[in-house]
Image (cartoon, rainbow over all chains, first blue to last red; front, top):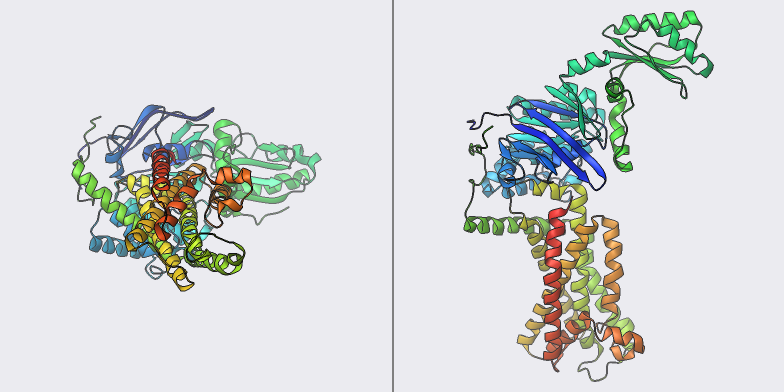
Length: 345
Length: 277
């Protein structure tokens, strides 16, 4: 594959966009080297989708500029469209048509001849494990299969730069893992990928670099390891049923954490970053709490979540500004994050 | 950094800066592809077939045999069934556009339009393909209604040429309403609201016209509306083409109205498509 321009696959400088009073993007800068994966991490309403829509020529920015493969998305959108693929938050497929028909029609719209459109469809169905279901209407597919079909459709034109907007939102944990596997294989093939997600573990699994967006601004950037370092690795969390003892419990574990424990007096939930000392910290916490005579529930060690990242970076919980229906969808697949929940006092 | 466009590296895309002729060629091909897709979808959904085929047939039978006996149509050769058929055809063509609005709203909601807009295809093809497919669908419905009409006693009384002209007028009328429907579907963008809104304007417009009953039987204030609205002009012109009588006055008024609808709503639909998010 020859490359003419040698700059980054995606370059964004000072990008701004407002919708009436709402300032969705307040000056975003991004640079994604070719063949790498950028994870854009942020809560609903942070501006992730707006950025993707501008980069895929669906929306005009108010200010700043955005280049994809060296081509300005505002000045030459038609050229940009030839090198990109987009898979959005919902499956943009025609449910009444079969998986095969969906892909063949997309192939035709990419101006492939009928035989080429057919062979490309067959190839992608095979690659995405959809061959057996290829001749069934897409509405009979599971959620995970529909998203896979949607992703396959975005690849029909063999894009150099792929945009995946929350590719696993709403999927169950198993379908999510399947999706990750497919995305990894794409990246191994040299595709540049910009991926938005609400889940730190997803960005961690897939991205080379991560930028964290909040309220339309980049508030942190770095590798997953660097970001985790800022949070302090794993998080120890438990609930104190007796609200009067919350302060005692916080004191009892104050020494084992890295940084101050975060205490929610309303719910009695306490959490603290414990770095890489996972199980040691867990044992120390049990001892400490036992020594102080505090009853706890659900003492567990878990991987840092987006909320922890936000807590560490901004000092506030990730606010969910998105529309209510989006919020509901966004919450679903978070369950699988807890590593252990065995210990209890 | 250099703004040089990357060379097409064996990717299945058209070369940079295609000529107008090439663009027109692809716009045509893309429109065909979208048309084909839309017709395939239509054939796969029993409810859509029900809506486009069975419902108009039921309307014909219902009006012919249930209401027909109670509706005198003085001066109409062949009686109520002849009066009815052009009206049913006009109403059917107008109602077929529900499908247009609903389909576009669905595609918007599901992100299908985003996907298509991010692809290097002709942008005009999505709307054009929708209109072509829906017009084809409408045409099929009209032919079926005429067939059923013949089975229950309807006859063209004015020659084959004018019979064809009537079908053409009905189809152009349906296409004009399609433009309005495309605009509302894209502008409202929510399936249920689109459906509700369609009922609110299409029902009064078709029923408060000369489609099913002679306007002279309506109360005076209603006559004032029914006599001066476009659906009446179109259906009266169609009726005259099918059965005989003066055509010209109503035909010119129809053409003026339909032209007006195209001039206003075709650009509005295109704008709504471009803005659709």
